[in-house]
Length: 600
Image (cartoon, rainbow, N blue to C red; front, top):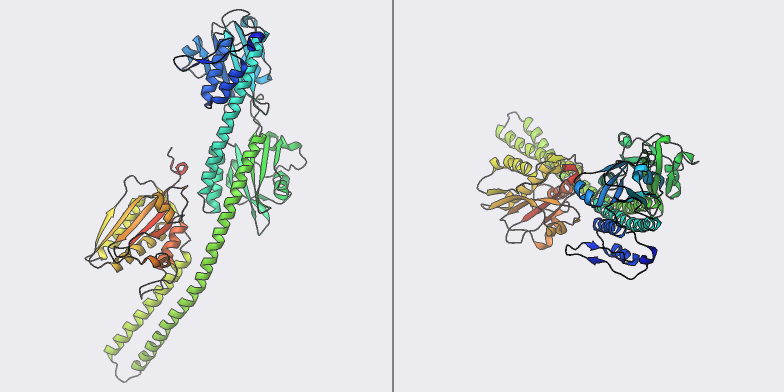
């Protein structure tokens, strides 16, 4: 029997049977049902309990909740209870709402409740269960008024429901709306966590934009999404990344301040949320993913840093084929995108600070490099000039002294070689951060590099220890080979008759912290360990600075070049050995993100 208005006010409680399922009776007050919704944090369980409440409190044969699937543009029966539902529960039932046909489709299309005492007399009815005679269907709206689901109860008795039963279903539908809103909020919260995680891993603007674009497509599920950043030289907001058909226009198109709705956001720093934006006076229809007449909703928010707009995030939704599906952006969507923009502004500011610091450090190093290289080349040129003068003197003699000429030739060759080494160090230092990365097998790369060096070695033993099933990474083979060769060469120069161990592994948390990296990302390591004298603790940081060297040969740029190459790969390096027990250089390189490797 349906629940009467008097019964709604009676004292009662929600009980549980032996299977921990919620049991409802006609003495169950709405306050107890609300308490169940409030305390049950799992949305799927809460919806199942609401179905049970609708079934038992209305004396129905079947009770179901059909949820809106925005991507498919239809309703899907996701939760149900009853004899026929249990027999058909293995089937995924979809209800087309594009035509508004069928009782459930009609309710979804019109947003009005529907009650009938005999479905056979109702032309809208579409047969789902042969036992259905009476039916109630009520809409479930979100806080923005959009239809997100339909609650439906069915009975095998004629005229089984009255107005109080319809009212009860409406109240349960309100509880279902609370559950769905809470689930959406939780989903958005998780999405923002994924956004923050993705953005925190970025070391460059390119990595940052790539992370935002990936999250917009995979997590936030925007149909079309674009990132515009201000170009300081032109003072225009240039497209830097896009989900949609503008991908091929990255770097080629942009907006001036005040130009169109996107340019207006760039100029004012105020978000814009428009439904059917062609009616807006600011609309120009420039650089959009869909024709203007096909745009259902437009959302753009500014990226603001230190009070200035430095970019715009823009999302667009297309008009769907289903006229009853409301896919417009909401204030919640704007809040999420604003949070993404705020976090992006913080990371961009951090990246800019790091780049300025690195630039400043490299400019200082450039000055020192210029001064030292000039001094070293000057010394070599002085020696070469002396050898050339001596050569001229010998050639002027009546008889050539072949032994003396051969000695002069040797001096000249050594001088030229030394200058070439200085110039090569100079070039390597300047180009250390210019990398062109490609996906590679780290173990294979390390093995190849080591095999190239092995034939030229003597008594020192060297071992290779490779981590099995190493995930792929991106690297510049030529640059990183230069870095690894330098570390191995450095180990050979400090080991006499000892041993060297080269190994790969997955980075531990302590490795990531020691290298000064962020633990939000996963890394692989290359370890080069030797049995030499090790490194003085006071010199562990100094050894990576330009011109610091304990060797006479070269300019002291070797480890500085290694550090520059590794950092250009988004990694880090530190010396983790113990003085007196050998040196241990640990290189950390970022692993490829799952979205790139295709792994789930």
